[in-house]
Amino acid sequence: MRKLLLAASLAVLASVSPGHAAKIALAPFYQNLAAISPDQPLGTVVAKEPVATEVPGAEAWRIAYVSSDVRGKKTLSTGLVVVPKGAPPAGGRPIVAWAHGTTGTAQYCGPSQVLDPVQELNEYFLVGGTSWTDFGIPAVTHFIEKGYAVVATDYQGLGGGGDHQYGVANSNAHDAINSVRALGSMGLAGDGKKALIYGWSQGGGTTIAAASLKDYISETGTAYDGVSFVGFVALAPDDLASMITPDATTDEGALKFMQGFASTFSDNVFNFAHFSMYTWGMVSAYPELKLTDLFTEDGAKALDEIYSKKCMHPGSDTINFTFGASYKSLVKPQPENTSAWTKALIDSSVQKVAPIAPVLIYFGTADTVVPPVMGEIYQKQMCGMGGNVTRVQLEGAQNHFTTPPTAEPLYIPWVDDRLAGKPLDNGCPAN
Image (cartoon, rainbow, N blue to C red; front, side, top):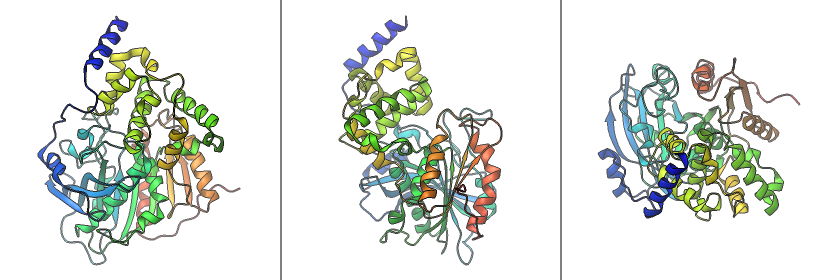
């Protein structure tokens, strides 16, 4: 029966023309963005609309703003801005930017698009989750009580047009940095220039990538110059480039690495969905790459159909329903163009530059989605360059999805201290 279903599915795919033909229904705010040019200064807010929220003492907006991808191409990103009611105080408000975890790649997968988006983090897998996706902003109630201005990017491609560059950490980091500029340009932080980024999973990788983008952060001519980032908090961050050894830059090494990459992240259908969606995002960022470098013709066509139209959990379920235990057959035994892939993976990931401010990482020992060893290697690399990186193992067997709520009461005081300008010891392990 499974074979018949698979054959029928591939037959349907064969009759469908390639590309992203099916229109994704979007709310008017997002539909209207297609007519707006991003050829404006980074952080420029090109559209906004009020959003209701039950966070005490807060007011909020959906926004669309100018950002740029890993190769410098201007893009539009969407997101949420949440601030305390009333005018900013003398000296302004500190800005806290949230970088969300994996939600998917289709245009409607941005967290700002769900009903009642401005609330505490609401996770799909956890008891109490109310949606088909993860959305919300962790600790937003506390941050509003403290008088901070909060912004949460959707990333490009999740409402603002274009294909989402999922897992391309430097594109996502640009979006987080420019979200701070966007909030500042709205006048909602007053004269506040102090900022901090925190994120989980995809957003954790975004956060540590942003920490090493000194030149991008110091650019002038933006909509809000002179932002000073004082800290970065990464929950279960991914950093694929940390796993790439120098020999992977050779043709033979690149082939071996890409084979291992595909094998490691195809151990179950959920991780395969992350892996294949990651490669889809890479193709959208680097035109020299093709899905057919790594997947069969039928596999590439199926994955493109899925990721251009569905978010994370429905996409994973579609792979499981359609292909079952045969999902690995979508992968080519012998990947092609592997040197270009490894070069792009390095280019897209955290740059080997010391972070500009202290970094705090939280991880759980039971995380099977993002191997904690990535954070361990990152810490060793950055500490060796003179960075200040603290890495904290959460108590108990915390998994990828219990990491955010478990870590929240631990990182809140750290965030408050950084924004208050308190001194901090170096968290790097002693040699």
